[in-house]
Image (cartoon, rainbow, N blue to C red):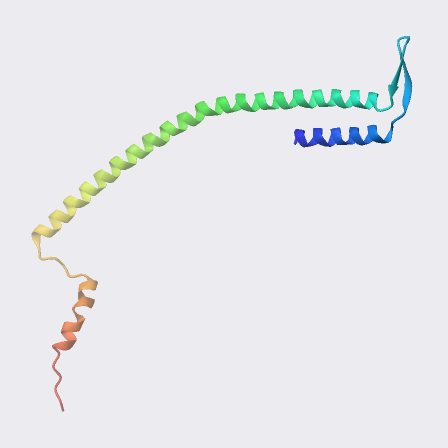
Length: 135
């Protein structure tokens, strides 16, 4: 944004310098200078450009310092995330082991129950073996 603003400022200064080619006498503290009309404008543009550059550098340093502070917080959060992932994996393993014990206990006692999918699969055999009485 600042770079675009500086470029626009330089272009406007160039247009002003091309359109005002004359000279003028400038007096300051008893000294007299015969300068082109665009010289004070160029000096003003240089001062504004310098101030914008200083502001850009300050804004960049401020954001970098803020990033350094956030980096430490991000590292702490990543540590918490890793701990939560490890605990989640441990709980999944514990749950899988518990489910395995329950399934093992259920399958040792009685004959396995047929699921509804087994019933659908065996429907063809049942229909094929059906006998109908003709009346």
